[in-house]
Image (cartoon, rainbow, N blue to C red):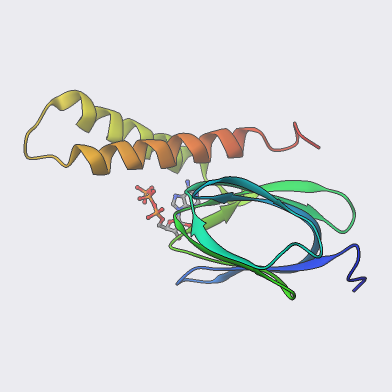
Length: 141
Ligand code: ATP
């Protein structure tokens, strides 16, 4: 690995190691806004905002990863991310995300006091973000 041009990224969820690779650039959705990370970035620990992680691999190809909230750490060895759930763009099941979106919209429209509206809004945002990432495959590269 050429440490001037490349860095490591590791992304783990309770279910799996989603990424364990050498890359050239990533945009991390931190709690205080997106952070562009190149090799040699200053060490940093922060919260991960649910959204889109963009990765550029060693061949220059870019892909997006959906991430839920979590934590990230940038160190001399690269980027480490821990989150509850994550999927690479081509792993996103658009039918599942559309069903989740419809479910959340129904709850939000119901005005049912027994329903947790905050939870429904969060589910809606997750579903919409997954759909956006899943539909964008191939358009950005
Ligand atoms: P759903 O209501 O469809 O379960 P969710 O937002 O509640 O959606 P999560 O709790 O974020 O789901 O994720 C649970 C598991 O399902 C994780 O392993 C996650 O990667 C996977 N997952 C959720 N939605 C999708 C999807 N649209 N495509 C592929 N995997 C998904």
